[in-house]
Image (tube, rainbow, N blue to C red; front, side):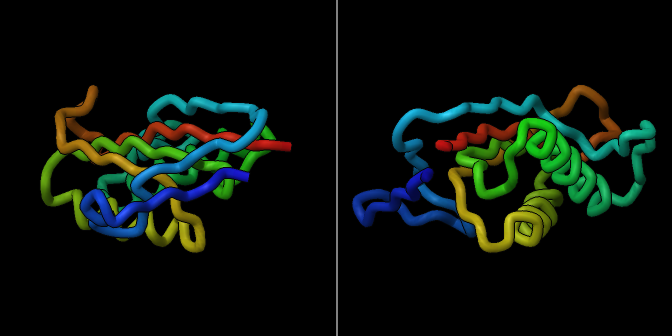
Length: 128
């Protein structure tokens, strides 16, 4: 079981995430490449919120393909295209990960396509 670590000796998280996650014992580790808000058919919605939701759906699809689920996520790296996407990302992340806390980092930066609003890379671990 992955273990959440928080300490009062460092600043608290700014929203729903852990300061650190520890993978205890032998585990399968999965590194998911950055997923963007494109449907499996290749459609890119104009609506930024839909792009954020699709990016998470794509992450969950890769997790399922590996025999894992959101409970196995230990670390998220999110990259959003501009500052107006920060609140959108946090709201969608909290909804998609409801009931699960993991380590999380967010960058505001340029993405490979100017039409993309978000890219999400995930590390997951399962101790069986």
